[in-house]
Every structure is written in C-alpha cells, then in structure tokens.
Length: 92
Image (cartoon, rainbow, N blue to C red):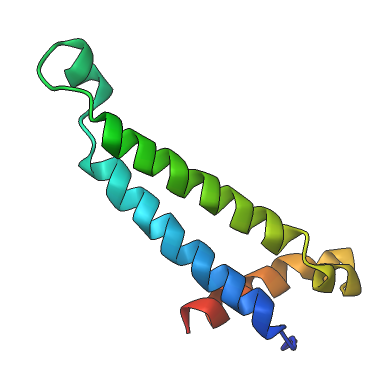
C-alpha cells in the first residue's frame, strides 16, 4: 500500500537524516575515550559540545516525527510499513 505522506513529515525525516549524518561524522572525528584515558589523545571539548548540540537537535526531530498527527490516522499494524515508505521518500 502506498501512503500519502505529508510533505512536512518528509521534510522532518530529511532533516533528521541530515543531522544524523552530521552526528556520525562529528563522533568519528573525536578521539577515542580509551586514548584520552591512556593520555594518548586530548579531549576535544569544542567537538564534544558541537556533537551534543547536534544530538539534541536529532532527538528533537525524532520526537517531532514520532508525534506527528498523521501517524494517528493509520492502523497500528501499518505504521512500520509507513515508516519504511517515509524513509524511502526522505532519501528519494
């Protein structure tokens, strides 16, 4: 079944995917904790702060997606499939 996905929901998911990719890049750029503890690397406070801010933004987007009123219009057993269609549309 193809769903008529609301544009604002697709936009939210696109933003979520963009911010999630940013979080992955920022996290990968930080030194490993074990290296910091072993004094083989220094903590990147600015990088950690930036990552925390982006993670907070990602969480807010996830909450907006999950609380979108459109989900309430679907039977519970169709939400997983609709979620996969939303992901495909956002990546589209």
